[in-house]
Image (tube, rainbow, N blue to C red; front, side, top):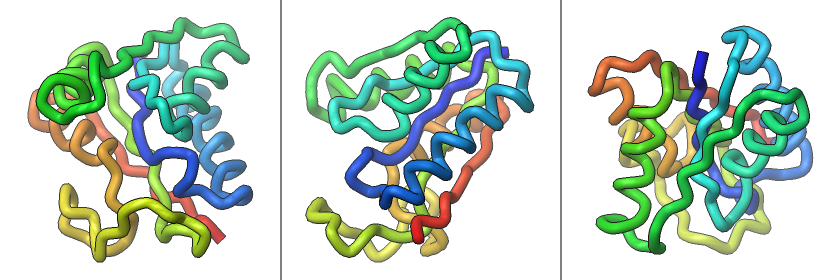
Length: 145
């Protein structure tokens, strides 16, 4: 089973949220009997980095698709499509709320999912695209406090 794991950048996680996310990644590997993990190699760290680190740690194949540039059209979108195509299942791991110290852009809701139960994540776009092409997907919302 090849699992794609995408989600939020490191700055969106509290220390407890980070720990819970890392545990969730290992649980996904165990539950799916993953033989490989696919990630987006985000330069901001977070889920992409933690999924790759966990894959290396337990000895499964790690496939990373870094964006060719930091733009939606020529970087992130084609990279996200690669992740979806290379995965049997895609998991998006994000948080229920941003920490007070987060200084990046804030949105009132996840405009990909049209919900307020988790913060906006580019991983949601990837997960929705994967579902559209027939892949199994799951959103994992981490309690960040």
